Length: 221
Image (cartoon, one colour):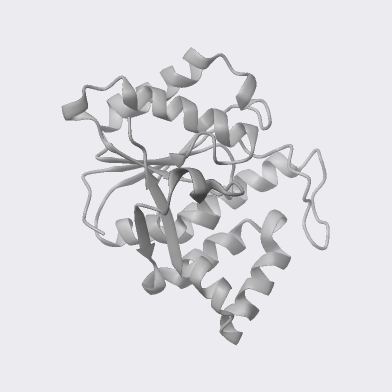
């Protein structure tokens, strides 16, 4: 990984950053690269309420906002943007509104690298809408001024279509920060995080490979 001028990460939900890119975020921050995380919603329509349950439909937005702030702190993110959209409705937002939101961030921050979901290969409708808006906003920048765009993909069979990842970041050195970010999203990940840590300790090869290597596809316009 090379030092970037500025990295902009755009995802729709709290915890989207934790699973696939938190090690990459922590590594960039450790290198002195500024990182901005724009999270479009608070994940208030999520089905998980903790295990054991400690949240409800009324309190979940407050809980997840605090979890997002805690995860950002665990990774060293000081520029966290909560964009105020409603969970599970990003796909219904006017396209130009979303693109305009992304364009405003790009113009303000002038990042050299943008990270988001790969449209068409990221499963959830909010993920897809977010990725499409980011891609469109970046595409409107002159080619010689355009930031790199690294996308996360995980739909079934995606590698059969878009090939192997273009970038694989091994994040072993910041694994404790990644696990802290996962654990911070307690309402969504508590049991899973414990199971992952147990498998890591046991040397489960599949889990070790998944957790310690973060994969990205370079979007080709």
